[in-house]
Image (tube, rainbow over all chains, first blue to last red; front, side, top):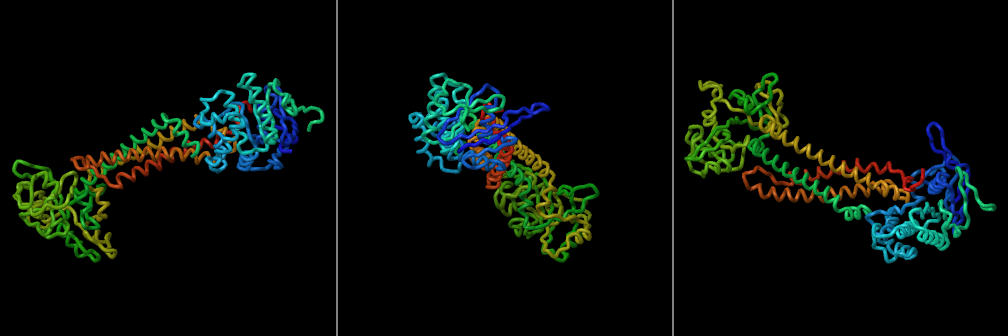
Length: 227
Length: 365
């Protein structure tokens, strides 16, 4: 398994009490598979994603990324792990206004201490993979919402992650463009063998998922037989 | 600097505005530094040019400060210093300000009275009771050359030589004999006694073997280094202090403006920083990037401002404006502006450390 969440409990302070966002959640995602996590707003979907992305440390339970358990790791170690093993597709494309589409991807090499110029070829390959090779020199304001989201996806794959975490990628897109983005994520999951978790509240495009997990009040419910 | 460079190019307007502010502040600091040095030189160059290491003043009364204007030393004090072990040179020096005229031209001058043949004055061996050495500014002001006659406080003198650019308290210096100085500024009377043969201070050359405190006690003087004696020039202390205060405030304003700009800039970039952190950028990497951006802006603006200040300084340095254009007056303020600006920027961008990458996940709690 490339992503394993084992018996995760996460609580947040809520006045004098604590609110349970995730309640003993266990989820295993193998490479090359896409697990969709659905549920109503406030059910715990994004908390699940935040824990898997190592951005939040759970109260109890363990997170294992590509065989590495994150328990006890320093913030710096977690940052390194995120940089090398985890790709994140944000709900909003969150592209940097001053960078072109190609540079949005090259920045991943830069933050890894490598030459952005040396990563140009891979960036162009990935932009080609998401159908934006012709838009490499465009800045975010010169791209449509769907194109920005595809750059967002390509950026998440730039460092060849084993885990791909996708947060509501269609929330700002119409049905047609949303479907295209979901299809793209599914194709890239299989082609690049990532363990993909897709968080969404939109059930319209979930036929491409290998399995669908539902979250209600912090509890994860998987289809029978799923781990 | 990958993102920082592109931000600089992308947000041209904002950075150009900030860069212009830095250029203007640096220009102001550069001009003020050159002017401060120029005014200072006009005030003290006659003292800093003396080939001595210490100056002995008549010991001031309780609560009084050393002052070239108030000090009067006697021949007895001078003799005592001259005989002190470890003192290799002790010469009386009289200082006063008066007016010199030559034909229809007149100018305020400082008269430095020395013994004929004194090494304190340039061409001191040409100074007599009837001949004086003029500094170039004094000769220019009076329109005089060697051999010409002029009047100094009613005394008819000839120009023995024109040498140096010594100034004291913003007036050009005329080196004259002590007798001429005494008639120009009669100190305490003219009864022929020891009090009549006085000077303002005693210029000393000492070795490490000189027991200065003991000699001061014995002679009734107070001796300070030549550099420290500059604070005994009242006009220099107040003028230099005011200008240095202005310069210091400009440095502080510069650092605060830079800090304010980068504080706003960092806040505006908060979401970008959160995304980069979530993608795996370390806080140290982001801090280096942001600080590098600030240093590029600071260095560019400061160099441009300094170049303009140096160009303007070169233009005015040859005029009546007392402006000194040296590496010290140009490069040192530039370096201080960059360092203090970088400190301001560092304090501003440190808020990068508090940006939570979790905020990049829009709907995360």
